[in-house]
Length: 385
Image (cartoon, rainbow, N blue to C red):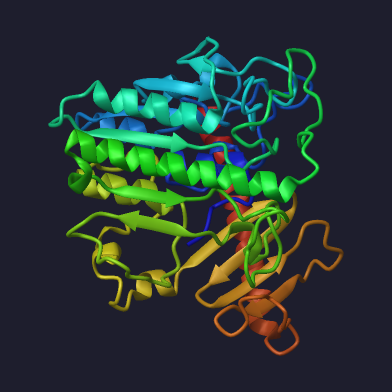
């Protein structure tokens, strides 16, 4: 499983639309700093989201936590099909004071700033449980929980607030033992996921609910990407190959594992398929439904195993064609890039472009054509709207 981007905003745009984020013009991070690209975001007049699709089938949708797809009110989640939003719109906030990295208050009820006290990880769960409790058991809902942990600033549940309005302070926080803080943040996240699952059980809807859990990028150097090369922000596997857990009793075989080639854009296609939602006729999906795959993970799935996928970030470019991967890392001087066979070399240590020059060159050309196509698609949509 992969995130469609190597950092936050791009992956979230791909998740919300089921399409490569480049089609929505969200190729990089949306910043809180007004001197950067703060006035940029996911255009509600241009994009059709996961939540909007579910609206057609009577779903109520709640979004709690990190949005990161537009700072200004016109890009708020409630403009994208969510009936309720409580959380923050920038890339990260102080876990206690909810001040963003640029020193602005950033805790919203819909499109209105409204302070709410509490440690962010617990607060997201509190609001999610309240959302679920508001609805009768026979009313379907989408709950999008976008947890901040373990994004910086590195603050455990017992740490004090670091940021004040106009004084963002140290970006990463003041803890010297950052790995210990990282561990505390992950443990808190585990606990809150457990609370969410218990709330579903208490409501009596747990066995009728799909739970999908994954990350928007690989770990930083404080975490672990195992044998994978690279980390968040890089297009080697460590930047975007991430765990994904899908749980549904009686549907997904317990303890099953699949190595089919899948990506976060597939989640929208999957959820819509399960709910009987049709894709927007003018917004064809890049993702594929996993509905049949997750029910039969032991079956051979050539349409997933041998598919082609693409990534781009800060002039880095990568392509998968089944087990083969071509990559031109960020700031690479060699435009020809690097070439690997991931089934034999998941750590991307054995460069094979000299052994497979024709295949490597063909994939380079395909990746560059793909990038031109998705960017042109975004331009045409913007002009049309």
